Image (cartoon, one colour):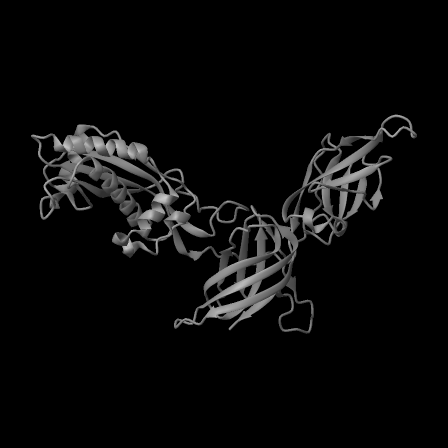
Length: 423
């Protein structure tokens, strides 16, 4: 993720890399970023000109933000992914083969620095020469920046010079930097979830594995929470010793029959529960040897059956940071949930204004955790003062909203919790 300064930052990085390397080979060389037609107007007699002459959408990531509601790995804001095309020109004393010497130095340098590292980005932004780029966050971009030489024939190269630059041709190379992503300012808006549904019966897909279905005891279309009771349905589930493995923890279920097992999720320690897709297996322990011989048991495992565990918001704390002149708020919001959040899990806060008069919505992504925790911190910026309904997504598993069931209430049937007031 990077802001509007990303393209200018890339140009500054390339200029800095070339300037640092080439001046060690040839004294007095300067790397400029001028229009090629301006070379000679105040530029030194010997130098390299780095000019961004073309920008194109990256074909591989052109539609990266077209499916914003995938469960994981997509940005919460729109992104533009572009490739940058640079014309690198060389000028100097032809009798001393200066342009060719400079060309060789540049080819070697970009071959050594074909990958722009985070350190190179940070060093360029720390350079006082580029203080106008101090707000750039290109170092946070997930995609790697590559410097790739382009093969371009003499005919196309001459067309570039005559059409784009309208200047006499100079010895030149073309390089492409791929890929630069630029984030938008507005986050995707998400509608509220469906409050109720009534679907026809679903016939489980018949298959050979023992476990065929894992559902909530309150109904197979009901969400599964950390406080839910599970019904594990299948075949040949009963045994002398039957256990269930969830998240690496094994426990004995409360009820076991040939075709169904009842399991209380609250019996699983919270440290073993993660929101998102959980795996479940039924295990049959078969004694080895005689009852008096302490030889242990042999385990027969079922197939792995998935189910989605949704988090629940337990507590909300808000710390307001400032009150800007434009009346938009910046604040720190802390959420405590009923499951542990792992250090590699992606957590997104979804906010919907509690209103029917053109409500607005926001999405904010939490910083990565250093340790597993049940508390998540979000840094909110540019939020309009209002009342908001809150949902949290952990690896795509979304917390639920409760509804007003008071038939005498003016908001009967509305989602009404959890919500916060930002004033």
